[in-house]
Image 1 (cartoon, rainbow, N blue to C red):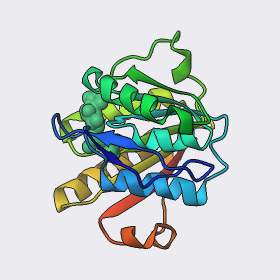
Image 2 (cartoon, rainbow, N blue to C red; image 1 turned 30 degrees about the vertical axis):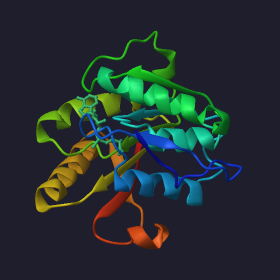
Image 3 (spheres, protein in one colour; image 1 turned 90 degrees about the vertical axis):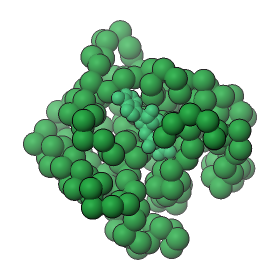
Image 4 (cartoon, protein in one colour; image 1 turned 120 degrees about the vertical axis):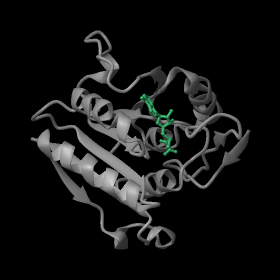
Length: 210
Ligand SMILES: C[S@@+](CC[C@H](N)C(=O)[O-])C[C@H]1O[C@@H](n2cnc3c(N)ncnc32)[C@H](O)[C@@H]1O
């Protein structure tokens, strides 16, 4: 286990997000997830307090924990095998969090049970680096639509690492599918990202469903 400690809570105390060298793509913090977490700290500092937030494909939980450290009540979700890492990171940062945080299993495409109160009436849904596999795109869209009903106030925040043409095409396809489901897609301008992320590699979009 090795920690990443570049993020700060609302009192400017450092978070420690632990990563592991064993495991798969969710075991470490992706660059654009750090970019999104820092963007939220820089530009949306006051927007998460007491808000209901779900992160899907959380991996280490980096973005969700940043929002929880800004006062959000966050449910961090992933495949079952990542729950241990998510819970570990919640525990390690407990003293830095001003909102509530919990880990839950959420497999893309699965139905959401009405009794799962933490998946209802959300203010924000976070999707960091989850668009990389064409096979799972429709399941991912289904889960996003379940969490963001039509005409809800739920804001969707997504980030990507545009590392090759294949991923660029997939992200374009993802945005097209979101538009078909009545989401508007708004790219964040590069000038609003920290200078180290002002390149063609990292991208953030915010989306709203009508
Ligand atoms: C590239 S990682 C991103 C991790 C983290 N969000 C970040 O940006 O640092 C993608 C994450 O999506 C999760 N994931 C992939 N397919 C999934 C599925 N069908 N259901 C739930 N989670 C899935 C993986 O387990 C992994 O944690």
